[in-house]
Length: 181
View 1 (cartoon, one colour):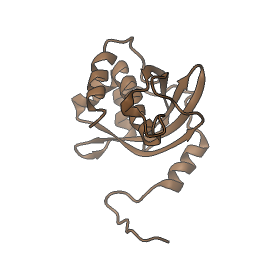
View 2 (tube, one colour):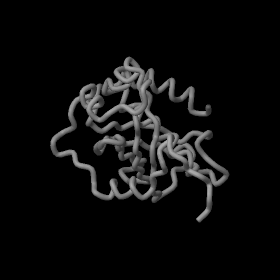
View 3 (tube, one colour):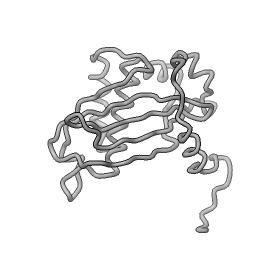
């Protein structure tokens, strides 16, 4: 809820920023707000992923993907995330969220996102995102048909496949009992 108004504002303002292609890099300038920090006075580790949602929305809106998704009734959901931290973003500090699609496979669209301040990476995340429609997950073929083919040189790093395989939970229709091994 704390980012709902900020997200709605971003959907409005991003539509007025320069357009991007689906495979371009979005750079979203932001400032650390009091609602982003924890008791240590820096951005809370869990908040990074919430703020990165804003970067993905910026890319989707500016590239026209958001409008196409809404028209088709598709909804993006995170299927997996990993993040590494290097430095802490402090209260009132200016930074940008750099967002780009690094590839897709039959299961997900993969984003790399970076929190950058003063030309340095403070945090970097990789997010696997699924698109869901009324009938379930949207196929890679439908995504490419709607958004266009990725550039020929866009190839997922091998470690992404290993990461997804090693960290995946069973699908929602399969059991996933809670038993500590």
